[in-house]
Structure formats: C-alpha cells, structure tokens
Length: 287
Image (cartoon, rainbow, N blue to C red; front, top):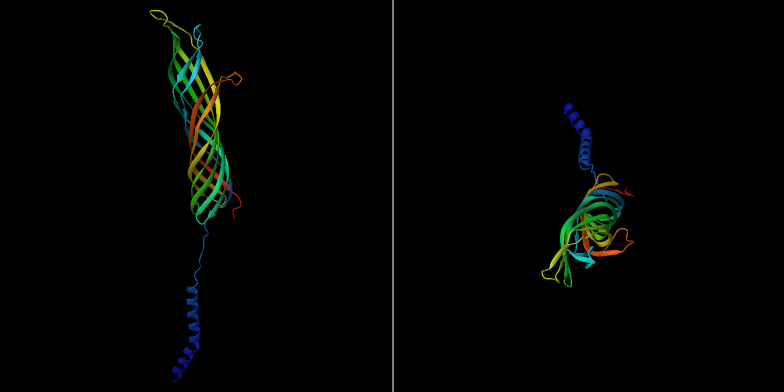
C-alpha cells in the first residue's frame, strides 16, 4: 500500500508539468513563420537607349521634268513621269526619356525619343515623252532614277501597359516628326524631231540633256507601337519594341545642285517607316 500511495503522489506532482509541456507544443504549431514578397513597382522617371533595323516605303507621285533639247525649233520637252514606289532599309539608333505611374497592375506614362537612321533605297523607271508645237513634234525616251534617305525621326507618345511582376507588356501611340532627302536623276537616251509640215513628214535625231535635282522634307505624322520590357534589377530593365511611323504626302521642292536654290520642279511624296528595336532603360529613385 505504501508503494501504491507513493506512485499516486508522484503522478500528481508530474501531471501539471506534463500538461504545460503539451500546451507549449500546441502553441508553437499554431505560429508558423510567414514570408511576404512585394510586387515589383514600375514607378519613376527613366532614360534609355536603343538600336535596331527599319524598313520603309517612299511613294513618289506622278510629275514632270523639262529636258533641254539642242534643236532650233523646240527649246524644252516636258516629259511626264509615272508614279514610283521606292523600298528602303537600314539601321536605326537613338535614346529616349520617359516616366511611369503604376496603379495596381496597370502602368501609364509618357515618352519622348530621338533616333538617327541610315535608311535608304532607290529605284529606276523608264519614261517616254512626246510634245507637239504646231506641226513639229519631239519624242524622247530615257530613264529616271529615284533615291530616298530617311535621316532622323522623333516621337512623343503616351504609354499604357499591364505588369506581370517584373514583366511589362505595353503599347504606345502619339505624334512623329521625320526628315528625309530626295534625289532624282533623269537622263534622255534618245530624241527624235518630226516635221509634219511637209509631205512626207521628215524626221531627224536631236540631243537631249540629263537633269539632276534634289530636295529635303520635314514630315509630321503619327506613330503607334507595342513592346515587352523585363526588369532584371530594381533600376535596370531590357526591352524589345515594334513601331510604325506614318506620314501624309508632302510636296517636295526639288532644286538643281549649284543653282542657288532654283526650284526645278516638285514631287508629291508619301513616306512610312516600320522599325524593330531592342534596348535598355535605367529608372531613377527606386527603393
């Protein structure tokens, strides 16, 4: 009986300690460690640079040139020139500055850029022109060579996008300004004068000259594009982007080189540019 009483007393003494230990284990199990990861923020002012390639078209509208003839009866020959489409390709590189403001997963902002270009192309078309003065007619045939170069462009756009944490998918739309140069060289390869005042009419050859003329145009239009940007650091990101720049037809004054700006005709020329670029941005004031 003495042993039984001792066992009961020992159990009574240890019971509170065992119950307290059990409570501690339950308390620890109810307090797990929680880790919270903040989403990446795209807010702030940024600067960046880009390089890429571009392709374009220059649509030369119909026009006319006056080729001087070495003939006593006819002083000049106005030759009608057909419309010509000139394809252009080349490289583009430049920089931009912008600002982003993020609302939930949406990003809004503004951006301005400037780029230099080596985009150019040329095309050649044959022509046939005939002019009649009384009973004298003159026919000339030859070729016209067209060249267009896109020198620089600048755009001012609004940006809007949606983020997937460090990935930003965005679009942009705004206004564009561009400068290009135009050169046209027309060469008459043959010339024939027909005299219809006698019977039968007589024909004899004549000599026609070549004409070279050039001009520049500053164009105003619109732009739209889209891209993807990835932030691999709190300040640095890389992007890839496609843009289209569209411009209305512009009447370009073409002058003869060395003629002190004397206009030797005009051409109605339309111009469009597409470009694909890659680059990097640096954002300021990131936490």
